[in-house]
Image 1 (cartoon, rainbow, N blue to C red):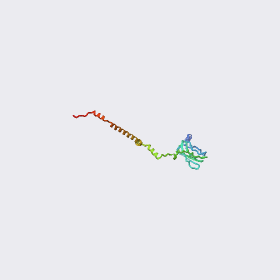
Image 2: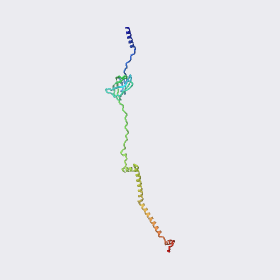
Image 3: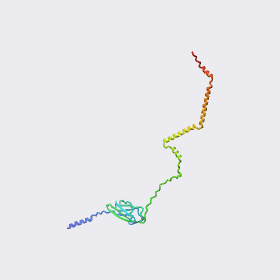
Image 4: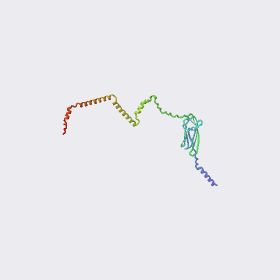
Length: 235
């Protein structure tokens, strides 16, 4: 009997001396920006939730309600270790906001909670800078447009050949025109008649001199020539 009591006392003493193993704790919300039940001048541009341990990105949700109870189109939650950041829109009204959040702790258990804050004034969206319109070039007035006459346009188009063959034809036409002009200048007009009359007079004068020269031969010259060759005698 005393031995059994001694064993029981030893077992109880061992249980009291051995350190206890702590149970695994879930992540806890440490702080928020804005803080719960805080009053701010205007709604912030983002919400920040800080937890005691890193949280998992899977299953993280943050829902924000405006003073009228309507859901705000908040941005996607950004998880970095134990910090969760949620972007908010630019234009938000004044009043009390409610934030409900849900994250997944490192051990896989979900953790939920909510907070509230009040904004004394609202915010407005930042207007985008105006885009300057492209420059517009003014069309010329009708009086400034110079329209060539039909004859001028035709002569200009003819004077500018569009190919090598057209240029050759233009040169040949110019040469033919120049030759025809030269022939017309020689064969027409009073200058040609004067030249023809002068040539005819000169020809008549030459013929007259030739006739006179032929008629001036004397019989003596004929006799002298006859004496050079004595007459033949027949034997």
